[in-house]
Image 1 (cartoon, rainbow, N blue to C red):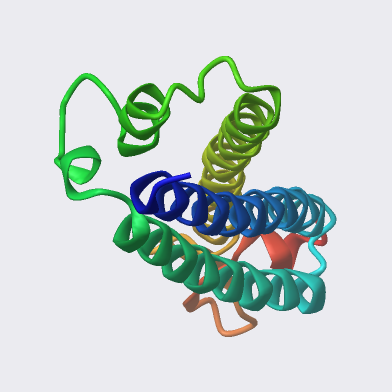
Image 2: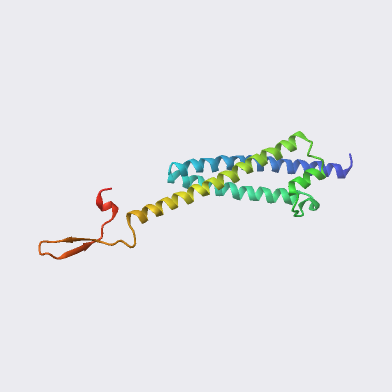
Length: 170
C-alpha cells in the first residue's frame, strides 16, 4: 500500500467520524425542534426557553463540526457550486455513492435536515399566529379609538366614560 492510498484512507476515516458526529447532532437537533414545537403549542414558556437554548447549542456545535469536516476535505471538493453540495462532490470524487455506510449517513443527514427545516417553518408560523392572536385580542379589548358612552347623572349632566369589552363582563 502506497502513502497516497494510506493518506486517503485516513482522510476518509476522519471525515466519516466527523460526519457521524454531525448526523447524530442534527438528529438530536431535529428532536429538540419538535419538542420546541410542542412547547409552543402548549404555551409552556419554561420549556420553550429550555429548548431554544438547546437548539442554539446544537446549531453552534453543528456549525463547528461542518467547518471541521470541510477543512479536512480536499480543496477541489470544497469549491462552492450551484448544482452540487460539497458533500455530494466529495462522495462522487471518492466513489462513495454506492458505499452502504456513507450513503446511509447521507440519507440520515438529509432526513434530519428536512425535519429541522419543516419544523422551523411550522414553529415560525405558530409564533407569528400566536403573536397576531394576542395583538388582535388587545385591539378587541382595548381599542385605541374608543368612543365613550354617555351616561347622565342626577344633575342632568352627561358624563363620558370609556368602556371596554372587559368592562361589560364579556
